[in-house]
Length: 248
Image 1: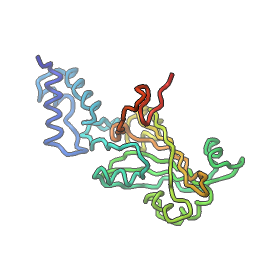
Image 2: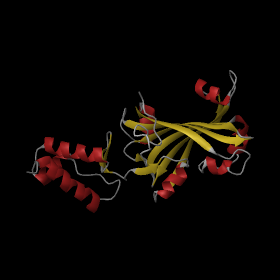
Image 3: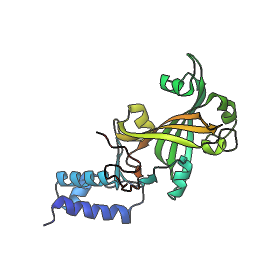
Image 4: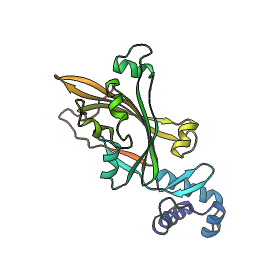
């Protein structure tokens, strides 16, 4: 037996994916009730399921729209620009901040800066096919400030660094689930306190076999537009998985 909300979900999914374009609004609840001959509760449940699947997205105060789809990325060292191009999407960037300022304590520690020392902060809104995906906040090594400010910061920072004495060689990255504050929600065009993925990345170059800190970045990704993909292999020790550390 197929429940009503499952039938509506299936029909609405087919309608959204075959008859509407990404970014198009779906009809309101009252119209969907009439079209499917079901209650508003059934409509809401079907829509909620499709939002959870990433087929639809809700925009506070505006309505529900067909998603542009999630970008799937393997865990690897690459710029946003490269990730989007590999996914077949057109990347674009708006620079929100690009100036020298006193960094948070964790950034100062990463670069071994003294109290009151400044370094370059670059904050950018990253989009794919003109739809917001992430906000990247990059704190750069002080010696790179003048060089980077003389270049187009809508392009890949790693690409700019490739021709300097500080090419990117490695990074350490962690990912956590978080919720956004109202200002970040506004920039990313999502609901207040919506769930996001937050990436913390420490990027290094190498000189004389020693790591040189290049970038401390915090990137906030819309969870309805971005997902991670990992390839796991079972090691000879069944308690150990490549790329992950078991906890006691």
